Amino acid sequence: MSNDRFLLIKAWSYILWADVEHVMSQLLIAELTNRIPVVYWPTYCLHNGFVHTNGFELYFEPVSNFTIFDVAKPGYTFYPPVWDEDNLLMDDPDKDSWVYRNIGDIMSRNENVVVGDVYFDIYTLIPFINKNSPAYGMTVHEIYRYLFRKYIRIKPDINTEIQGYFNSWLKSDGSVLAVHVCKADTSQQFNLIHGQKENYKYMLKSYEKTKKDPIEKQVKVSRLPWRRSKVMEPNKPYHDEIKKYIDKYDVKTIFLLTNSEEILTEYKKKYGSMVVATDCKRIKEDDAPSALESPMIKRRRGIEIVKDTYLASMCDFFIGNDFSSLSQTVCYLKDWPDSNAKLLYWKVWKRKYPINAKIITKRESNGLFRHIAELVKKHSKKK
Image 1 (cartoon, one colour):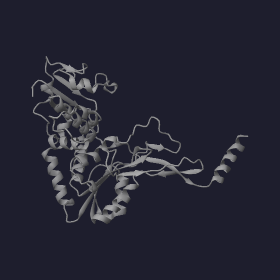
Image 2 (image 1 turned 90 degrees about the vertical axis):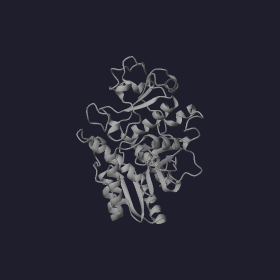
Image 3 (image 1 turned 180 degrees about the vertical axis):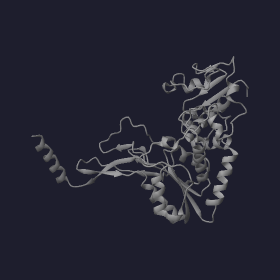
């Protein structure tokens, strides 16, 4: 591999595991284009509150022996052309326009440094994988797992904290079920009664086809106008899934991962001493996710996320949220048997919706005559 061909991987989403997922796809691009990967998360990243530090290396070991200072070398050529050796520490405010970010161009450039600051799903990279690549013939999930195992190594102090907690709280003779429940997202409410599907961004993952898909929560929708609406409350299916694991596998401990104080209280009330959770910052019902962050302790918040994720991967079973990068990462970190890990989501009209969102679906039968009476009443009021 040439020592003057680099792929500089910058932040994309400013959410820790989502940014790591972005790093994974960029690492695959580096392998396929024979470039040296260098990951750099600058000061503005969500979990990097320190000036002139690499946020990625606050939690993980470097992915190569080179740094951004090796990349920002006078005389090097850069792509996209917005970059040069003087501005690599900055963010590109126009990256959302995707100008000069076509995947074909990225894969075929000859410049010394290509900057990877936009997200490509690994599914879109599969056509570029040749027979000489270790990822050849793998599924998307297998590729993510391969990349995590090869490149992601957490810092020793974080690993020590993880091992200590596991030995103290989760290492037992009984089965341990890890459950990741995201705070209910009140900003996302999907009214599906009248077929409001336009501009919908959540689609079924066609590349994850399986013979049986036990993880979805299928929702049938009635369009009959005389049926009243039914609300599918956020996160409610978790309890049915948990009961299945308790009954079938004699689960003794539930390791709960959540960013919500209300969810932690709910689960402790329902499951009692079975619930174990790390001592970390959580937000109240009306708080925004940004309430988790303090510029002085951002690394601590990041450590809490990494710690919970790795601990969940060390448990016997796992239930998570299919739309959460944290839950996805738990599945990448371990080769789970199909029956041992489930990611939940709502599914309506072949579209997937976050399990922590409110779904207004089928109308409950309430009688045709009542519907007619309501129409007559509305009509009389107009007169």
